[in-house]
View 1 (spheres, rainbow, N blue to C red):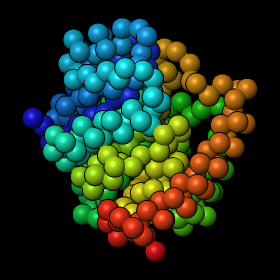
View 2 (cartoon, rainbow, N blue to C red):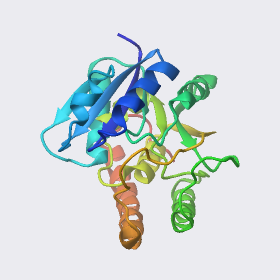
View 3 (tube, rainbow, N blue to C red):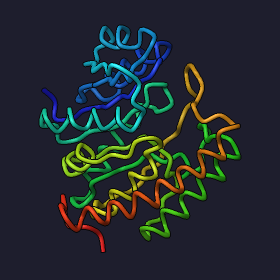
Length: 246
């Protein structure tokens, strides 16, 4: 068994999952691939397994946060030292995985590395103007709560070491977890950094955050992050995983 695991949450990604798994194997052959089939109603699981993935099929759709946490629980139980999250829709380029791993290993105190589409200018997919405004607002909120400057707080393309695996296996945000996870990592004093990557358009399907729901999404994430910050602070006082950040 490898020391490294790629966690791939997927819900109805029949058109992209086999190619995603194959790309991960080609670009990062040292990584085992675990597809979390999040209650798909199509043949996502059936397509992932022949492509070379281990598959955990959830009986119903639990949402991306819970699906990802399932992957971290698997990583903890099986003793993986590094885990990377890769979307099952083809947006994340697996060729960036070795760069994330190099950044994670570059400094001994780095626990979490996030791929950012905004750290450097590039030709990759950078989302709509409205979403970029929302991302800038989330980045400002993260800075106010943690003092940490991030450029892409909604990126789900992240890699963590054993410390992060232990934390996220125990506690991982549910609905829209990317921003909350940054605050959670800061609360437990996990050192983080960003690495420039390029995102790609989805191979198939549509984002669940439609234009009509974008305002609702914005408000919900803002409230969730504030609640998560208060909850995480309270938890560290009673059952700390590691020393909480000051």
